[in-house]
Image (cartoon, rainbow, N blue to C red; front, top):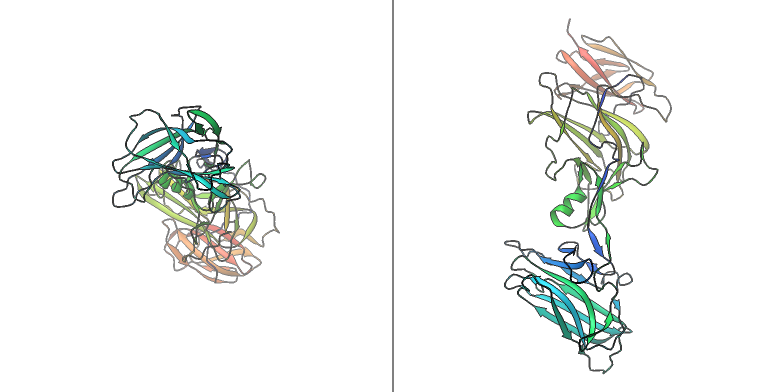
Length: 466
């Protein structure tokens, strides 16, 4: 039997009163800036653009970060990408030079050593190198270095390419926090500038930062804020043009790859990265449903999950899930009944969306969950059906009932579950279009019904003994 889930499809018209979830339509956007140095390969972590420059508007800053009991991290930038030499394979060079010059501001911890290493080449053949190391501090001032070129034994000083590597530290373990700022990298011949490199002044950068919906957080943003690093493949993005239910944008949550493993993507409402499962936004009334639209494109056996929680005075009042396991290539309406009771009204809520939520770790890399137009409502809005009319309706009687409940349906009931207002779940006995509520305690219940054709409806029934 497939997973039982509480997907509510309403085909009736009813006026509603709704509270918009913060940016529940995903129209308000933000970008966490991260600037990439053009034509240079850089580690994401500990490499940044800085306006503290000697020449022009910008310079390159490499940092060391000390971590007690661990190796820490360093900054690195180079003009070759060993994994993709067609993309970054050195800087074009052509000069009769004696030295490599650059401006530098630095403050390194005792024991840490920065390094400038360059290999000069002609048609792929080694011609010479520069290998310069320095320590200490420049006392918050830019100083200029001019480092002689060590030419090879061939005697040729004709070059067409230079491979640069700039380090804030040369070894694997840093001894303390520190930084190096590089600017105006060029060739010299007895103090005269005789050759420059594309972007040797570190002026050309482009933004590869993370775009995300305002007031939401994602695993991508968590990785960047925690490690100043990007996921190997993006997990949470905004939909491409035209792929929305309403408006300009919707949220797309994807499984992502890290190393050789595939993990589920997720996004949640929050201003901070620790707002994962905490009361986050005000819950202004006794709303009964979370509703919205989704598309689900599973890769394999993945099951997506939408989880909403409500709270009162910091304590949890409800914990409600919608599990999605069937592919839905078109926008589909959903509504989740909220399981709190009226004894203590909620004052806040949280919401988290998962692209996959199975019990194992077998996630498909191509699994995608699209979500749009999220809001809390008193009653679900009518669904504008894009498929054939359902053969199951919301007509049922008697209500209240002491035991038997009859549903106006042309199909037999395959499965039914009752959930009390405090979240307790009960499997119901069904026969054709009849349900037996006689074993339930008196009270209000949300009853989710699945027919023999997998059509689903949730109704609200009152069990009252005579």
